[in-house]
Length: 386
Image 1 (cartoon, helix red, strand yellow):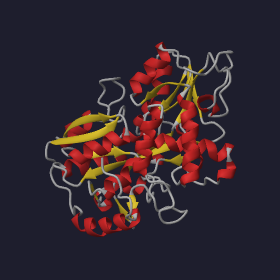
Image 2 (cartoon, helix red, strand yellow):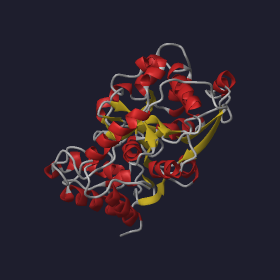
Image 3 (cartoon, helix red, strand yellow):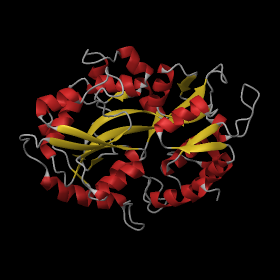
Image 4 (cartoon, rainbow, N blue to C red):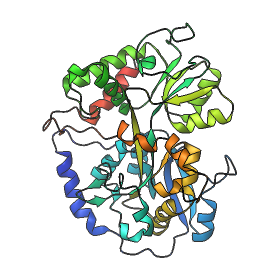
């Protein structure tokens, strides 16, 4: 994967890329090329095969002639690797991947003037720092939401109020230990979840952002994760494997996505989710266009489709996420309602620490924070018991 070099300033690199790449913007959308290849999170691109009620691909293909092919990725690192390899047009990148893709020169700036529905995008997202550099947009917001605490309602009669049920050894309400019955996310960005927990429980560390950690703060987060290693039955990254673990392997608590919670509930599984008192990390995903996209016209047509069709509304219901277009909650374009959007976290925006790529130059000073390449190697060590 591509990561920022150790000594270089991330912002200097990004500013340079913004200045040079902006000249390569598309200036008009022409006829579709007949195909479109998208790297996406599980559940993000549905054509009615999983559930006939959820389909935002078929009408797009019929109206544009752009036939959609989807490659599912399980982690942000996998998305970055796939985009580095090339051969894809779009990616639904989360904030811990988007700046890496920009810095690596793998995505191109997006001309929002060519996307008529850009004006519908939530003002809280339009200029978000995880895809906007020096005022230049490198994508179109797609969906957003929290990393929720999913729990077994037969074990927890009341929602757990703290993430301590997955971080600290303890007996759960059913009288049994949590060891061997909890999970953690299999991705280096999960270090931020540990840092978020420490913001509340060890304020003396002075953590102000879970993505900007100095050496002392970072060491404390790793120590917490090493202790958690004794409790964790599986480090998950496959949504469907996690669901199977909750159904068949005795898992009772884990960080998760609303997508899995919704599917398990639809199958009658005794699960629910909550955002504990510490808040939550989360994702705000962006459609980003590969710098060498073979089907840029189809890609721009999909970006407009993503904002103007039933996609925002129905995907929000299907995934348990929040639309990037607030009107999708109320305009009847799909299944979502205002009540549903609020239930999915529409009002929790300020409680969510959205995924960001950790870089050395941070608000604490130049070269003051631990950069992402160390998160990668150290988290592998944590999982391996080191």
